[in-house]
Amino acid sequence: MISSLTFETLRNEIAGFAVADLAQQFGTPCYVYDLESIERRIADLAAFDVIRYAQKALSNIAILDRMRRRGVVVDAVSAGEIHRALKAGFVPNSQPAGIVYTADVFDRESLDLVVERNIPVNVGSPDMIDQLGERAPGRNIALRINPGFGHGHSQKTNTGGPQSKHGIWHTSIDDCLVRADRHGLTVTGMHMHIGSGTDIEHLSQVCGAMEAACQVVGRTVKTISAGGGLPVPYSAEQPYVDLEQYFNLWQATRHRLQDAFGHSIELEIEPGRYLVAESGYLLAEIRAVKQMGENTFYLLDAGFNDLARPILYGAYHPIAIARRDGSGGRVEQDVIVGGPLCESGDIFTQEEGGFVARRRLPAAGVGDFLILEVAGAYAYAMASNYNSKYRCPEVLIENGEAKLIRRRETAEDLLRLELNP
Image 1: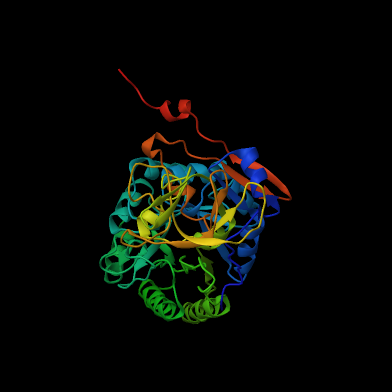
Image 2: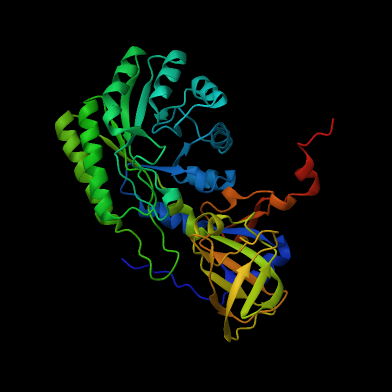
């Protein structure tokens, strides 16, 4: 299935709001999210029993709250994400559990919160079983299994196989069951996530590995999680995963396990990127246009402190221009798009390995706007104060209204935690 999105290089509005008006009201750079896009992606996954959002992709509490209202529950990978989920109204003791802690380690604060709040745990390392069992014997747990292989659009996002730190190695399940028995813990859930960009061939392998792992654990298994990794298109040529085929593979796995165990099995999916990536836009202003030899540069007031994916992974983001005066002339040129930071790597048009690439974009000048699209996932979530830059605001477009859901940082915010004794 090919993406139905139309990526244009000239865009004067976002979700019905003029780009120039958004920039005037909220300033640049800023993130803008379209709630309707998130709602469409939630609806895509309605066949699954449980949609558990991997909030690390985009964790603003306003976004989490809107997901909760639409029946989505969340995954938390840190104490901070537990606090975010609680603030957004999720409760651990709902059915299904509103919050599940999934990680490869317990730091001390996370373990305290899990014990005090009775938060279910998806265990990623055998040592976690002993650490939880000593503090909270008798609970139910889930195991995140590393099946021995992985998949990802970048080696840095591959979460399976022997080079990945994630999950319990597939031959260590018996050891984990012994540890669980020692503390009266019962393994009732199984989870497997091998990385982003899952394709059907790899998915078949994952389903087979999940079934084999569940057979080792036995009839105590009540829930299986398909993990995340659902891809979204960052260009018109990239496909969505075939969701019907994706679900049917997991449904067949679930049915075989139900037949083997004699009871129903709940089927979860754990999307992060899939729910939010396409909803997000990073709106920036062009602050300089200059010629460097044969290269033309558009330099923005946004940098990798705002969007780190290109410098981290060589990630591709579609780019559009919005002229301040709203004009639509389509004269184009090859340009390199960069930010304001004092780093040569502060380039948005680069490939993995740091290779700078040109992009064909409409001619633009200082004061015009540039939009980095499909920027809802792992974008603001990775923002930093590098070069002592202020983190930018976030705006949610909901029911025809543009709402500020995070204000722009100030100098006071930047210095608030620092001491000079």
